[in-house]
Length: 293
Length: 131
Ligand SMILES: Nc1nc2c(ncn2[C@@H]2O[C@H](COP(=O)(O)OP(=O)(O)O)[C@@H](O)[C@H]2O)c(=O)[nH]1
Ligand SMILES: [Mg+2]
Ligand SMILES: [Zn+2]
Ligand SMILES: [Zn+2]
Ligand SMILES: [Zn+2]
Image (cartoon, rainbow over all chains, first blue to last red; front, side, top):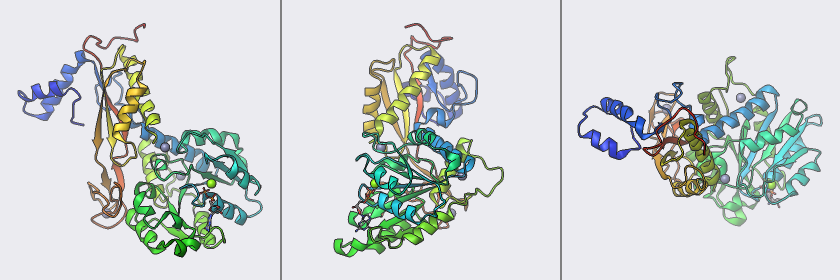
């Protein structure tokens, strides 16, 4: 970092000091009486290490929290956690229902739903015999890993094989808020138009997998599914896309298989941990492209 | 959309620093905000100003500095990812210009309290002052 919040001071010093290093030293010497605290610099008043990103960075702290959720679910308890994100009405809940219908009878499934509309989604899933936690905040525009970690406390994780998360219907916010799922499925539907991916590129970049849903309606609404598919590849290279019609249960097998493949969750390195912030970040970025280490 | 919760995280951190320094007032906050986030800088400033009301940071100057993304590829390439031309809103282009693989953003997703400045008279003391 080379900027100095006290621009006036920096400017006046600039006139007499040539090298940036010397300037830095002078400014550091001068800021004592001004009362300045800069994060990530060695003059941390504790004399300790510079403040970590998580200490100073609100979004890095969110990502770290998501890493902790992942650690608890996937690594401590072997729970396969899959998140569904996407617009309201895109088909997140129906796709979830289709997947649950396919699950073997002995698969123990839980779900955390954040749909702000009400109890509807929870009720639909409970009818399939799934343990459901409704984290209906009513005002949040997205789930965050803090909400998820509170919600998972009400599950017996030892007795769970799969946990589904249904995010709040929103194509923007979840991009900044990973939840700690091993796989984020972004559901886009043909009724949102064939520019849906180009309109929300940063959310697409956080998806591990895209489900292009309501393909049965594509022709009627004049949406080019191939265009959506090629946009996914442009915006988030290497992200697999599946075409589904959840209403008629078409294309869901391929999606289900891809999600099952992610269950054998392995980081490939015996000594891999997520406890360090760079690893957490790295991990979640990797997880954006098929979660491979 | 979620600037308020992010702002509260920033203010909380700033107030913690002020307390550590025994400062009664914060004069200026500097936030580094990555471009590859959905946090809007103007709304963030507004939310920070709102969230500081009635705290030692009330009335502080809020400075928001945009941080351009930096991408890194496993092939060894590192640099400015540039803007995704095909998209209708800003997004970094995460395809490696060298090998075509997907790159990783190593910068540009932060919302980080970078500096807290106190008034001249409130030089750091040993502990928090009463009041
Ligand atoms: N035609 C058609 N309708 C669908 C499809 N998927 C979901 N729907 C319908 O779209 C509506 C919204 O679906 P829902 O799963 O509640 O969306 P959510 O808000 O994303 O959870 C419901 O009436 C579904 O029956 C699909 O593939 N094709
Ligand atoms: Mg739903
Ligand atoms: Zn939000
Ligand atoms: Zn893992
Ligand atoms: Zn490369």
